[in-house]
Amino acid sequence: MKGPRVVSAIALLVFGSGFLCAATMPERVTHLRVADGDVAFTLVGQVTNSPPDKSVQVGYLPTISGLTGLFASAPEGEATALFTFVNDTRTTAIRHSGPITVIEREGTATIYAQSSPHGDFSDLTSFQGGDPVLVMSLKQQVVVDAGSKVFTVVIVQTVTDSNAFEKDGHQYDLAFEGDRFRISFTGALNGAPPPSGFFSGYAVRIPRDFGLHLLERIEN
Image (cartoon, rainbow, N blue to C red; front, side, top):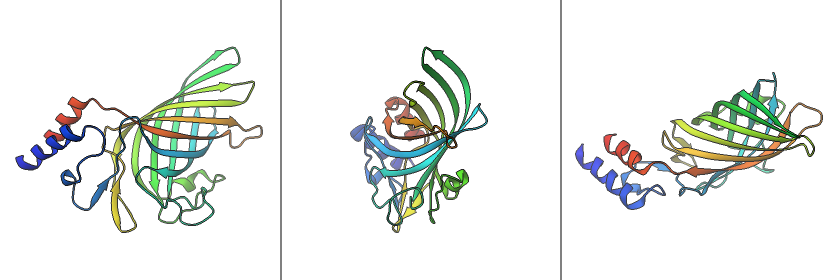
């Protein structure tokens, strides 16, 4: 048991928090990694705020670093996307500053792998039909400009559960438990909801405390 733990620790010392040595990984599972600060995946989606203290954001991932062929067929969109997401959040605070409204929320984010894509923005549950590959806790801040109807969102998501998935005959996973991502959205409010708005954005990997990460890998 001591041998694999030492090898894992050495690999982390050499490669840091970017890509990890394949020799240290479980057989037949490819662990997709990006360097700290690099884009891990992108997102396109819609948000529905109803009731007022609840916000559900759903959509799909058009790109994931290290993977290709993320759509079952053309055209590319929610109905053909192989990876979808659902953010289920509750509002914890609302503040105003002139025309700006600042909304804070907490909740969960889940990314799903879809074996039979069928995303439909008129049916929010359609984005939950696959296998959950990442489950994350989240905190988000939304800044809405009442004049332009444009909003920006910053989210910090922490992985609480990561599950391997199969694609093209290979097994992959997207993150370790405890990994964190910073998500940035830009969107526009819908004048005649639902939905409440439309958005697109990207996720970058947040650096982990290296000493803590190393300790966790050795102990596990």
